[in-house]
Length: 600
Image (cartoon, rainbow, N blue to C red; front, side, top):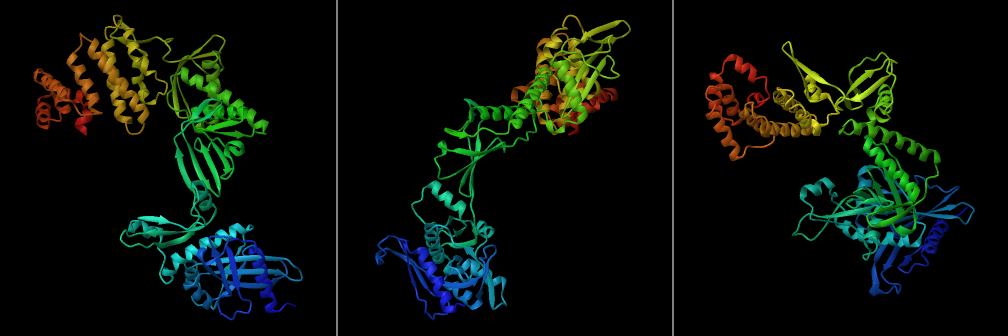
């Protein structure tokens, strides 16, 4: 059985064997040293000459040996005397353990860099113990890694020893103090940007903060910590000459560059120290697109990438291995075909809202199939118990206003409500029936708010088609415009996109009415146009004058004068003209959206 001296001798020999080829480390370790807490030092040089001129410093070491039946690697700890730990506070020590497999020549080295920041935490966690089991780390595989480790340890020791009996700053404290500078120790001062980021992303490092511009020292920050580096790159992502995304994100983590494209759609990973354009990168594609347009783009992107085997991020081209999962490729192709057919139908139905794929129920999926057949392919379809009528179909986050015509064979033809196939007519009195714009029907059942397939760009043309045929067309268009404004007020905060479309269309319609309706009350069209404008901005001086002139010239029309006063925010005049209105006039005015400003 080996004696303690034999075990120590083997441990020191193993350490010296590991570093014997080092050009920057010189060991000075005495096997018979009686010093209580240290066995010697490892001298660090900046040059292979190892002379005094190039001496960077020395690292105190304590070397221990222990015999084991089998190597213990996972969660390996070694007991250290508490008095030794307290000594290491003021003289940071590299603690080295050599496991010696009993009866063999096999050895395995472990270490722990006992810097003051770490030792303070150990002592604080075990205040009453005489010995503490301290976790050990396996020695690095390569000598140059150990050399780098000692160089960093030497730099960290010098910065931390002055704070051995003080608490390190937390990052929150540093932020509150207003950090002026953050720094860290690296083994080589001449690292380029990528070398530096690789090192910091693969090693735990201590941070030091300068919190006072007048005091030239840095305080340790609680650590150590591993770093990752992220940034958004505003450069295009293209495949096969087609740009799919306008930006991508990069992250440097664990010594790898990771590129993320399309909010998690594609992830590329490659080591920093490889020639990036020449290697086949590790690639994964995972699409969970919520919206139809994104799903189509992402599927086209994935298939193009599979075919070409290359992707360009910014100006750099990367080679990509083709997917081996043929079933996955075929599934993407099938999904893409289905999505494109659905997109074609929604385009025909003037749907501008992003279609949410995640909210489609099983019943709605069946309705989509019917729509693709009927609208997309022009087929007649089977709809049980159908009658010739108007339909409002809710599919996912979109409501569609359609017409349904049932033939004598029981088959159904579906169409867009706004396609001109329907005749919309209104009866006035007993004998007057006038055809009118399909848009007038949208006042029914809050359809301006509910309907998701409104072709706003066709609205004015739909009224123009009945000028000269329907003597009430301007009046009907005016009431439609007011209903649009009323709807805008209702949804302006809850549905911004739709509210914006309704607002723009209502303003355009009011301008068309003002320019074309010469027989109706033209001043009323001016007031209506200005009440729409007031919902988005303040009036110009010219617009204020226009309202004042209308109010002054409208004697005998107290409700119009009241409307102008409301828009002008003239409270005294509002009260004056409100008192001048009859109860019937007030009741009628309160039904119009201009009252929105008075109620507010």
